[in-house]
Amino acid sequence: MTTTTTPVPYRRPGLRRLRVLGQGPLFTVSVAVLVALVLVALFAPFLAPYDPEAVDLTSSLVGTSADHLLGTDQSGRDILSRLLYGARTGLLGPLLVVAVSTLLGTLIGVVAAWRGGWADTLLSRSMDMVFAIPGLLLAILLVTVVGSGMTAPVIAMAVAYTPYVGRLVRGIARQEKARPYIEAYRVQGWSGWTVSVRHLLPNIAPTVFAQSAMNFGYALMDLAALSYLGFGVQPPTADWGAMINEGQSAVQQGAMLPALAPSACIVLAVVAFGIVGEGLADRIAKRER
Image (tube, rainbow, N blue to C red; front, side, top):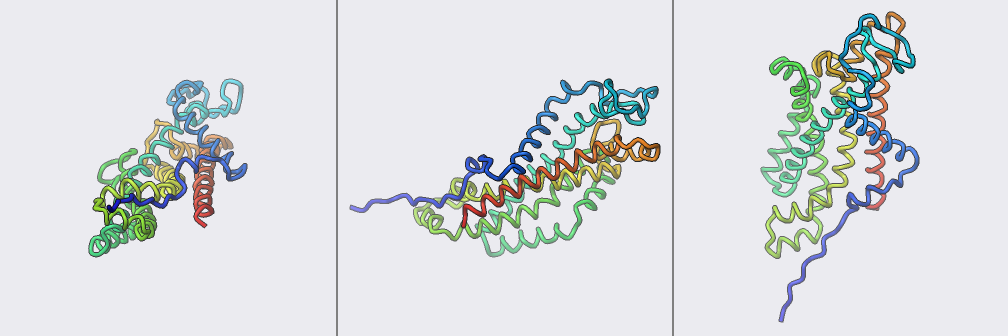
């Protein structure tokens, strides 16, 4: 009598293992910063001492005080309140960019790696074409058609970031596809869709997750740059990039905080996301050796 045994799949380090903060103090501090930013964005209405859009020209460019811990901008709006609310737009836009680009890039990369042949060639050449168009230029072109705001820049940057994820997923998915357990499942009659969803995707997820963390920081910086140039979130909505633009004239009057405070927030967030992404990537590389 013959028996059929289920192949044991090769398991890469999963997301559960990546939650362990074993990357040193810098990694731990970066994670704490990101958690704090998320909490600030969620609870901004409860933390902000003032309405971020409330104009008070009698309090224009007031320095730091007990009433305004970071002072006010040219319109008399409380800088701290605008920073807290700006965390919402500052994190929501990149989150949408990363979510869409990761979903599309993973789908394209897995299909290209699994199907191979003409499908791989077609999808790879399509990603090369998108690579040829700078993301910021694509966003500016889309803004001229759709109009300024968050929608057009998010769509453009999601399209621009998709090939980065697609190439990464294609490469690691091809390596994973060559492992014996994948062929064993296929011999047993499992469909390619089932094998990909139940076994291939979980094994490549940690690497994709690490790359997404780094992409988040890049997307945050790109969207802030678009807002600074006037193509993203528009005043009076609180946004870090737009706040830097508005604070330029205050610098000429000797008031540094209206531009310096949002700049520091952007740098802090981008560096924190970069450190976390690099830390996760290093952890994966060490476990695979």
